[in-house]
Each structure stands twice: as structure tokens, then as C-alpha cells.
Image (tube, rainbow, N blue to C red):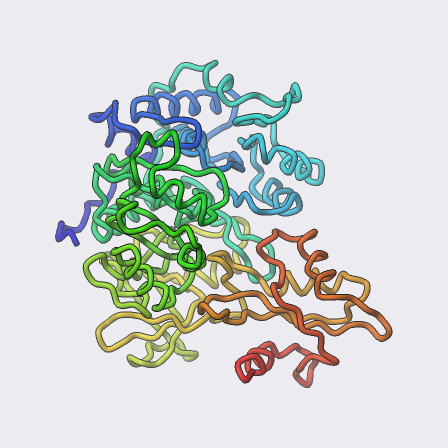
Length: 529
């Protein structure tokens, strides 16, 4: 780990997009991004970002107004994100796995003035726009797959029509920079507002000081750019040191990941990633796959994991097979990236590691006071990358952002060596494949089925130590429904990753005297089996 001094705070006038472009002005020919269709040098990135900034301004979009980004991972994504920030406009990066109803809500909630969308996702966006009272004046389509409507503009034509914006917007470090949506326990996502300075801090404190990223690295993240984790992995961190990034539009299946780790993608021209970022579910899938590459077929020097706690066994098996440790950590959308982490040179499997320098950690009991080592407590974080607020949600903002502290919603235990071990969620939220799932949302969908009287959803541990969704269902008298029918019903109405992998039918659900479902009883029942 680097022993560099604490990084200096950004200047009073600070624009994160400008910061990255200026940091790489001395390496114009170096490759910034490689995607499925080709590569982009740092000089080309700078020009395209500034053209995007000028094009958005020309639409009449003003500073701090929002632009929705519904895009697969390709070089157009960072161009759009940084182009908006350069112009002082706020990109709202959204999950590509959601439904038209979700996007309808986000369009209305963010009051987005334009949308930039991948051609493959345009039908879903159009369905969302029909359903919503939106303010979108222009839809820009990257890589169209069908002829465009007159109200839609092709991405390349959109940016080519404008000369690069000569100067960035005179933003400050605390000005709104971008939004990410965080899953809410009631199913409604929360618009998490981050400043221009926040990604600077995560890059300095974690990307450089803990991971030790280098200009010579080729970084590849299975976690997509719309995740806070993926945004750091594949944009803020590598561009802060002048590294190259491999972007992948398709789903991160083991086959797709292996093809890239072994340099078999044509656009890589034989180069192999040196840094790989994934999540525990993905690592488990890779290890179980018959085509897992041999150690000599990859060039990995660093592997990172976040999204859910990494089972020790997965880390140990990965190290044994590929000769490199998995550096596990915990971050959040609210803190933007990782704040407790193992170290490349110090890995304790089964723990999440030690606080990242620059962040303070407290574990508090139900009385709000710090707990002793070895005792579980609610996790609170203090650090410079905390979000400004949840947009338009004062109640949740106050619950989460308490003075200088941010409440994570996770239980942790502090060990004797100062490391921290995950102890579950403080609420009923589930983490499945690294993505939050609200049990309430799945339950509310199940009870819409005509045969279902009641439903309760919990997370259960799979054989590999990772969480999967299980539903307990009570059918109406004389009604019938199969588990396959109910699974398909949920899949049709929610994002596919949210459906219950297991359904058990019960005569009744455990409840309190007031009729509230006792999910903990179902968890106890499951643990006893």
C-alpha cells in the first residue's frame, strides 16, 4: 500500500470531468477505453466529452438540470456522463436491468430534461415515457438497432454537430455532480445526489492509496458503470491514474468474463486485463465453470470484490486456482465506494478488512452508543465522499445522513485485530448478486396473483454461502398455483433478478398479535432445516 500523504482537498472551483481530462492531457495517445467495437484514446475522449457538453448546452439544458443515462457499458457511457458534468449538467445514471415502470418513476422524480439511451434499451425507455408525466425534450440514441423517430437523435450525429465546449462550467466541489439511484426498503428507489468532489475522494483514498492502481493497468469491471462500485472501478479510479479500461456491454456471464480475461476479444488485440473487479456471486459462478482459465492464461495482479460479503471459501479457492487474492471490501451508493477493505498485501478471508484511511467507522448499539469489540452493532461511516442527500426525500435523508455520519443499514462486528466482519442487515433488505432486493416489493407483487392470499419473503443461504430469495406463500381457500407459475408471474412484473428462486406453500404465516408478519420466525424455521 502506498504511504503517500493525505491528498489535498480539491480547489474551490472544481469540475470532476475537467479534473480527469486535465490529469490525462499529457498522455493523449494512450488508450482510455476499449469496448466491444473499438478503442478511444485520451485525446479522443477529451474531444468527445467536450462536444457532448456543447451539444447538451445547445439543447437549452441549464446547469444542475438532469439528464437520464440509460446505457449499456460502452465508450459512449463515460462520454455522456463526463460530458454532462463538464457542462455543469447532472447525469442520472440508472440501472439497465429495471422495468418501464421503474424508469417512468425516475423520469418524473429526476425531472430529466433529456435522455441518452442505448439502442437496445430504447423500447423500454419509450414505454416508460408513455407511462410518465416526464419533461424529456430530446432522446439521444447510442448504437440504434432500428430507424429512429424524428424526435430522436443518433449519438454520433448529436455530438458531431457541435464544436468542443472551450471551458467547463465553473462548478464547486460541493455542487451537485451526478445522481445514482439507491434501492429503497419500500421498493421506491432513492435519488442519491453526489457532488463533483465525491469521486475525487474515492479515487484518491481507495483507488490510489489502497488498490495502488497504475498507469500501466488495464482495468475490467464485471460490475456495470451505473453501480457506484462500477463507476469507481471503470471510470473514476483508472482515469485518475491514466490507466486503460475494458468495457463490456453484455451480461457478465463466466464465458463473457473469461473471453476478456484471456485477451480473446478482438478489440483487445491480445492485451489482458491486469485488474478485475467482481462480486461474490460472479466469483462463485466462475469457480464452478468448467472453462475457468488456468493461472498462466490470465495477467491478473489485483482482484477486487464488493456488493455482498465474500465467503472465505470462495476467496481461498480463487487464490488457489489463479494465484491472486480477492481484496474484499464494503461500500455503498451513499458513500460512493469502499470504506472498509482488505488490502492487496493483507487479506483476512471471512472479514471485510480494515477502515480505509480517510474514513472513520463506528458500530453502535440500539441505544446509539458504541459497542464493544466482538459485539454486533449498526455500521456508521464518516468520510468525504458521503452523498449530499436523497432528492425530494427529507425523512430518509435525515434517517441516513446524521450530522457527519452516514448510517449504512448493515450490522458489523469489530475483531481484535481491528478488522470488521459482516453480521447481516439492520433491516429486512436482501442482497442478491450484489444488488439490493426489497422483500416488501416481491411480496406486494406475489399477492397480486389471484390465487395468493399472503406472502412473506426472506433471504436464505445457498450452498456457496450466498443469499437467494425465498418466498413463503399462503393460497386462498380452494385456489391453486404452482411455484413455476408464481415465479413467472413475478418475473413478468419486476426486474428479473428479484424473483424468488424458491417458493414454499404454508397454511399460515407467523404473525404478531397485531397481525404483522414475523419474518424472523421464517428465518429461524429455515435455519433449523
